[in-house]
Image (cartoon, rainbow, N blue to C red; front, side, top):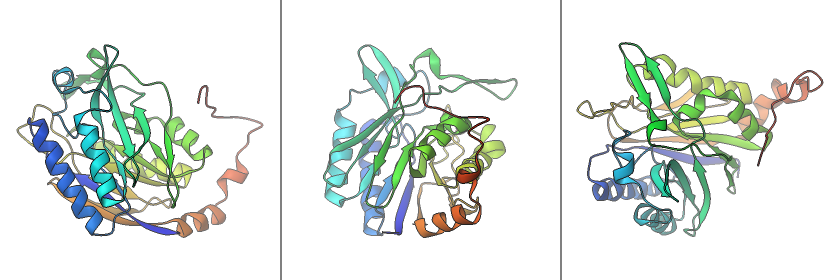
Length: 276
């Protein structure tokens, strides 16, 4: 299956968890009805984004939100990337992405490994590490179409993660993410295009919709980029679904035309995985 439809759900997120989950499931059904085979929700889809919200909205996995995702993935017979939720486990909190298969089983769980701790004077200061702990493992899952690698938001800045996933055979990298009005216009699309061209893979990002009244205002602009670095689809700032038909034949052609993987100088340098 050389071509499949990907959908990114740019969800408007409220302070009411049950509403967020219900609306997410409704949009997932709409995406599946439009032929999407892999669907992604945005980062922190069931909760407002912020260190003060993470403890309040955190859940175990499995838990109420992920149970709903499992059910809707099975109902729609799709691969569902559940954006992320604040996860509580053994007294620690994580920013965690779950993936469910067409039969509703949990295929993958990924905890954000690079926490968003930045300070841009006069613009934005944020410290996820005040409440969250970092994950310590990679996460991929297989579909009939291709292998998919997972990252969350700030992870996209770390080229090594994308390189490891590409070494492991991923042809699509999905980053649920919530950039902001400082980093969004500067780096959101640039980073996606960099990761796509560096690794000759498809890159997709699913952002929350922009809410100017929120304490953290997301950039929006959920995007799909092809291995040539072209933007195939891009949302505005409102709640919407972004669709893109992913052509793996095109990926193969690009890798043949510019054969960087055969040309790497492994005698001079390497990016290696320290743990599975």
